[in-house]
Length: 222
Image (cartoon, rainbow, N blue to C red; front, side):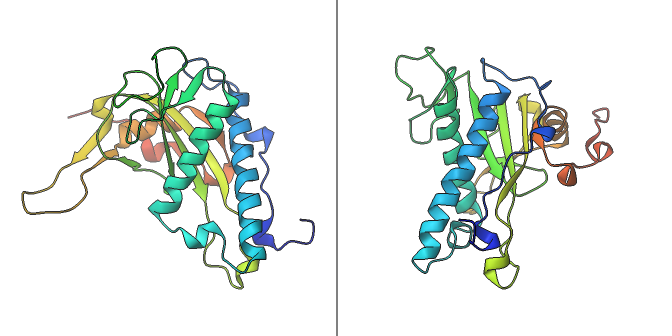
């Protein structure tokens, strides 16, 4: 789409921002993660082009907040499954983690597995959440999204600006329960220790979105 609006331009992975020294588990490779991100760009490029041609808004405007983040996570899980020979998508609804090592289970449908990678997508710079604190590998896809520029056709395309991964422990989470009468969703947040681990092991990061290291420097626990 050479004459397409700015909002429909397809982002490209900048290979200068790829960290080939990153530690990745279970045989996953940097090239596989990069291929999955580029495939995600292809997916949204095609879908948004289809929507715009028929008078709709981009998915980013149709699915705001957690709904879009959840869809992006699902796409990333499926694309890593497609790109990797070592990991497969967990097909169990609500299963943990999202990606399972190939051959570890008879069927790739596990409610709660001890090995694999949990995938999260967020536009936030830190404090990423889950429903429960979990010990295991986490991969965070941070994205930059423009839903405010006017007119809409001049908005920047959604871009993955950081891919971070780390093997988190239970103490790297803060759990937020709820009172007996509350209906608030139970959540757990990755604390500053966990965020420090993630930021110390980037797969990919746009230099304009790197948080200064001292903001998440580890301090002695009380």
